[in-house]
Structure formats: C-alpha cells, structure tokens
Amino acid sequence: MTREVWAFIEQENECVAPVSLELLSKARELADRLKGRVCGLLLGSGVTGLAEQAIHHGADRVLLADHPELALYRTLPYAKVITALVQERRPYIFLLGATPTGRDLAPRVASGIRAGLTADCTALQIGDFERGGETYPDLLYQIRPAFGGNIIATIVNPEMHPQMATVREGVMKQREPDSTRRGEIEMIEPGFDERDLALRVLKREMRAPTCDLKGASVIVAGGAGVGSRENFQLIRELAQALGGEVAASRAAVDAGFISHEHQVGQTGVTVRPRLYIACGISGAVQHRAGMDQSSKIVAINSDPDAPIFQVSHYKIVGDLNKVIPWMIRAYRADVAHLPTGESE
Amino acid sequence: MAYNCVVLVKQVPDTANITGQAMREDGTVNRAALPAIFNPEDLNALEMALQVREQHGGQVTVLTMGPPRAAEVLREALYRGGDRVILLSDRKFAGSDTLATSYALKCAIERIGDFDLVFCGRQAIDGDTAQVGPQVAEKLGLPQITYAESIQALQGSEIVVRRAFPLGSETVKCTLPCLLTVVGSANQPRPPSARLMMACKLAATPLEYPTLLERWPEFETEEALDAYLARRDQRIPVWSAADVKADENKLGLSGSPTKVLKIESVVLETSESKEIPPTPESVAALVQELVEDYVL
Image (cartoon, rainbow over the protein chains, first blue to last red):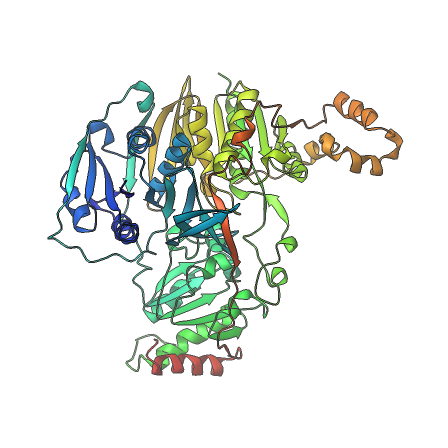
C-alpha cells in the first residue's frame, strides 16, 4: 500500500497560508523518502481555486471539502470532516501547522481517532525505532523542544497511526512552486448535524502584523530586566535609532510590556537577523531557541551569570538604562554624520 | 442560574524562570533546582471559574492529575477559593502522554458528573503542547473554546466568549456544557486569601498522612488523623484509576501512542564571547566595530 503523507491546508487572506506551503514542501520531502504520496486537505467555502496552488507546492492529490458551514474555521465541523477522512483512508503521516487553528484542530482529531500527536515540531525526519527486540522501520521522528526549550525530545509513534504532528511556523523551508505539476482534486461532500454546529462565530477581527521580525536584519529585544512597560520605550528607541524591529522575551510579554506579536522564542517567532541585541533578557533556553541563529548577538544584562551570555558574541554586564542611551548616542555620532536636528 | 465549574490544573516545574543557579556547568538545566509551581495559565482558568461562581453561583471543583506532591497546587486552589479539590493519582498513570492523560481526566470528570463548564489553562509550561484541553473536550463530547480571554455573556444554556489570538480576536457563542482553555491575558489571578489559608491550613490527602503523623505525633494513627480531617472537611480525596473506572489499557505507557526515542539536553554553547566593559567609551567602540563590520 502506498503510504500517504497528509498536510492540512490553512488559508490566510484567500491564499494558502505560508505555514501550509512549508508543510507541503516538507510533506513532499518525506513522501519522496517513503516512496509515498502527498495529499493536501483543503476545507472552506469557495476555496476550489487554492487546490492548484497546493499541487504546485507538492501535493499529488487535494481532498477538497467546500461547504458554507466551513467558511470560517470552527473546531467541530472541521474535526468531523477530517476525522472521518482519516479513519477511512488511514494516512501514514498527518501534519498540521502549529498555528492557533492547527493547535486547536490537531488534538481534537488525534483524540477522536486515538492517534499520537506531537506538538510544535521544529524538525521531522524518517528513521527506525527499536523496542523489545522489534524494529519499526521508517517512522516519523518528531523533534521538538520541551521543558521550556531546555531539552530537545525526539518522539515516535510506532503503532497507533497516523503519525500526527503540528509543525512550527517558519522552520521548514518552502520550496519554489512548480506550475507544471499536475495532481488530482477529489471533492468531499460533508454533512453536519446540530451538534456539529453548537458553536457560532459572532465576530472575527484579524489584523495585519505590525512588525516583521522574520524579515528584520536588526532586532532589539527586551526582557523582564527592562522593568516596566514604560521603560520598554528605551528598547523601541534603540530599535528606531538602528532601523531595527522591536522584540521581546516571553517574560516581557507575560509582564505586559509588549504584545505577543513581538515575542521571540519557543512560543513566539524564530528569527535570524544580522544583529540581535538582547537587553535585560536572562536567556532561558526557550528564548535562545528563537534567536541563536542570529549572526551577531549583543547581550546587556546586570547579572554576570545570566545564561544569555553563553550564546552572545558581545557581553556587556551593566545597567541597560545606561548602556542603551550610550549605544544610541554612539550610533548617531558614528553613522549619522549628517546633522539630525536634535540638540544632543 | 448557577453553573458548576470543573477546573483542570497542573503542577509544573518552573521552566520559565531559569536563572544561572539552575544551570549546570556543562550548560544543561538542573531540573531538580527548579521549584514546582501552579501552571500559570491554570491560575487564569481558576480565576475565570471563580468569577463565574461569584456572578452566577455554583460550585468550583479543582482537579489535578499527578504524583502525591501535586496536592500542593490543590491547597493553593483552596486558598484562592476553590470549593472542592480532587487529586487524581495512581502509579498506573505514570508515563502518560497527552492522549492517556486526557482519558484519565475525562474519567475523573465523569465521576464528578454534575458540571456546566470545564476550564483549563491554554497550555502547561513544561510541555507547551496545549493538547490536553481539546482532547478532554473530545473525549467528553463537548464543544471546545480554546484561547478564551473573557466571558462576555453567560445566560441559560449559552455562553459568549471572546477568544484572543496573536493577531486578532473572535467572539463565539456556544451551548453548554463546553470546555474553555484560558489564556494568560484573561485576568489577574487573585492571590491566596489569608482567611482561606487559615481555614484550609490542615487540608491534606491521605497520601500525605505518614508525613503529617511525624509532625503531629498526637494523632498516633492514620485513622485518627483521617477522622479528624474528615470532621473538619479538610481531607483532600485521592482518586485512583479504579476509582474513576478507567480502562488500564488506555493509561500510562500502554495507553500512550507516542514514545520518547531520545532526549537531548540543550547545551548553551559558549560562543567566542567578547566582554565589553560598561562604559560609554567601550560601548561606543563596540558600536563602531559593528558599523565597520557592516553588521549595523
């Protein structure tokens, strides 16, 4: 039997969401390794046009459920359609994006079919697993940080298939689309009863991101050490002076200094800027997981033993309230030889 | 109309505040050095349930699954106003993944029986999976409302909830009973009340009796202590797998589809680090170096 790798296709602004394109690319790679097929799951209302895009990005087949009740994502109708499909066709692997939608849907489906599920994977590989003298070949290695990012766990699901995983956004590489690829589109006719529609969406307001951390070449990040929401203005000022984006650790977000959108780390965004300046961030490994690929890291912290210093290229043990203004002044003096009009 | 609430909570190692002291020389984390805490978003879930009780009446039952030590978070729940707490504890639960955990919790919630709303934190900070809430909802056959930030209306058998996402929000209306997973921005959890701490200071599970007898030798036997605590309504019940009629094949390692192949400690590699003294001159020199190297 041909092994199938399924990918759930999310939509964003009437296009396939970037995370789903990443998933399709990864699914293609895994399916090629398994000599299997890639199947995309596309649910919505009036979304037929997106099926081709999924095929261009690696799907051999798209299972398409187009129904008015599927227009906006809701757990129960989506889970019903997908659970039935998985039960009927038994894919080998089933991947979803670790987005708010994917993380709502995946556990619901996994519980319904009693399959294993690993959340928020940062790497997926194919490999063997041995247990009690038995070898399970070609399993999906589901690799993820755990324990606040302090350990990296490799999880397998030897028997209760499909092997389900949600995959972190921005981690898998997206392949170039191939518009000559051909695939099959199969229509699914869903039916819903009253219980599936127990929840209604009264209002949904989504906004465009106000920052682009993924694309930034300079990032200034603040942590709990910044001290207050007001003082976070210092981080913004440095970012503005350097032409960079503002980021934060989870501690700073949890403390309400700044919105979650700016969070870098295991439960935030993964970034790879040319320069990352960590201010008052202790450096829990969960934060490091999101920024350690930065080309140059400058860390400012008053605690000389802060773990952040173990990954930084430049270590400044000192008070960020003093160091940041020095930096701003030095940068303006250095680069902006042009008069700024400020009376400093 | 009164609403009975069940709140699912978890005791977790404090992975969010790892200081230099919890790091070993080789750069790995010394887990034993981390304190065990009430999972932060579970406190938000408890707070939301307590506010439902305050506005509408009803009972707040707090349930945790864990080792005997997890009774600590149940006492904390009592100090914050929980009406009734239950520890689900059995060696048979050991090694459970989220599927087996949610099955055990489902069995316990069925034994609790009379409820309108189930609350839990969005996710626990040790695993960050956010899976147990939706899986419990599925097993109970309930609608789920994840990322719940506030209850906008609760009337009759309908609830209106605002859900918060990183980039937006959604308002949904749902029929009861249902399950909510609550985000950290939902509320400011109340601190423990001094009055309740006094009132519940003896609260203990039978699993803790041996230790308590060492502290209070005047009770002589566990039975005597048990009778004393029961009289004062200070006995925290412990439910086993059998007590909640759980199928053993669905528990622990045998009930868990996922297996851990390996665990690698993340080692903070010491990169080539250059120390910059905290003076205006040195900082200026660093900025200049970054500019000259085209980093800035």
